[in-house]
Image (spheres, rainbow, N blue to C red):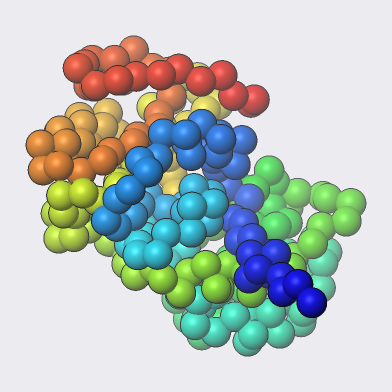
Length: 257
């Protein structure tokens, strides 16, 4: 009798969220740029985590400044069965959507807040994550025909994938300065420099990411390079990128809009 490998028994982890700027369509390119050997994987703008879930590193630090996302990934990692049970309690309709949207996630239990995050992400327009200046989610209902808000196999697979990750809420600079060491692989996917008025998805939290933040990020990339880290960064094809990263290898990739 031939035994199946662990990889063939379990579904490979995939991103849980639809995410504006998600890297699913760039995975082949990103994987080709990944070093063959590295000490630890660090991703401080985690978002949907497509590269992390594809790589499945044995030792990782993932982080976000967005408290809702951090809560979600912690719950998936530690309490996925309760999350699945909670998701099955929701109705899928417009009235329920706006009722759930009005809830303050800070007043919910961690499982309730995580379920709310997935529910809104699956039913909102185009999978956007956008908040107002008070930090309240404000994306309208998406009117999908057959939306799926609960994928138990996918959630359990993601839970297994997150077991080897330290999950941190914090500013990317603090995370990198506290944890990055020579030989680590750092993937940076910040809010992009907008190349049109419709391409600015930077309001993931009520705090925004401006041009001066990109200048500061470029300085951090140079510091990491000098430290001896492997660094991969993605951004839009904006003229400022060429100025900020002069001297680094830059490759332009065509993507679907």
